[in-house]
Length: 443
Image (cartoon, rainbow, N blue to C red; front, top):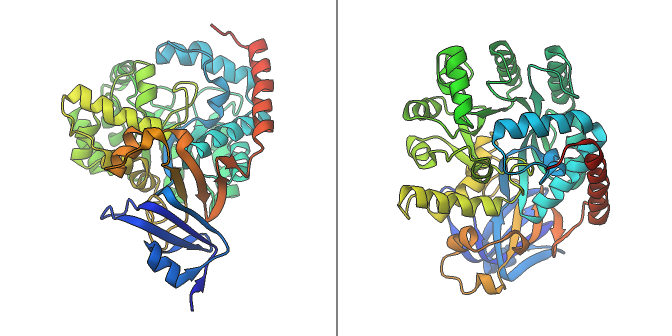
């Protein structure tokens, strides 16, 4: 007698991204109680399981959802506000004044709804954020049905979210009290950077993360200016400085890491700290290009992030994969340097492992949560197919994502997002845009 399950998902290819990178042609998986309970051929699954809901089938590819390990989701409302500028000027002259003028609980909620809508439509199922008003961001994320590691931003100067160090820390502790153990939201401590946080602030942030066994998310060595600033102030490069104050550990997710030298890469590997590679933002802000192949070869866990839409200017993990693979080939003059399987690992399983969720997410395996996407491959630009990994990294675009399942629940089907009112979300974005134009300098 076949076992009844909540959902059966089928495809021409099931791309598992498990340890053996098993690829199942004419594959399927069964979902019950939010988790994958079986995976195999369509013939095998159809004999063992029945469901009222069977999706996918011919001309679909089944993948684990993408995991975006560095975002500032609410900054989607600042998309295109200040482009073609170096990071320091972009931050100090445009972003920080805009945030001080506009940020609020309502702003963040509406902005994160738009960000979630964009990410879902691009196949992202989990994101790691760093921003302010984390509870509003979490409510919007839960409403969208997405997963997030929600980082509470900490700086050493006042912002609209906190005026003192004590207030920033209270914000973090309140997020932990509210969301620790939540099925979709993981609280996270997010000290902004070494040039905006003192040693004391960094140590307090690390202590909270350690005490609660949650991630800590920080910008690190994003620009040459930052490295020189830390050298001037502390007489050490950034990674050495963090190592010496006891900050580096396996719960650290360091965004960017563009200017790491070989010794620093070895230190990151030694301490099992992970790196979120945000190549499109780094390119656009002319920050440089991180030595990702050297990091991977040294054993550093490298994942992919989009950064915020204010500096990218989108939240597409598919675009991030393609750019990563191509740029590193060009600068190394080696077309084999980052192959398509490696880059897809960065966007899936390695991202889950970086967030401390490798046992739950990032690959299609029995017992893991059913965070699954279906790609419609009946498209001119996806025909014919010889190597599915190559197609995903080099030919895919966000509009090819047909269906998104998160926590066993269908969130998007036939390109229609079920959990978010798209018209209302776009209308809110237009409303906030009008307010931004009234209050902020726009070049």
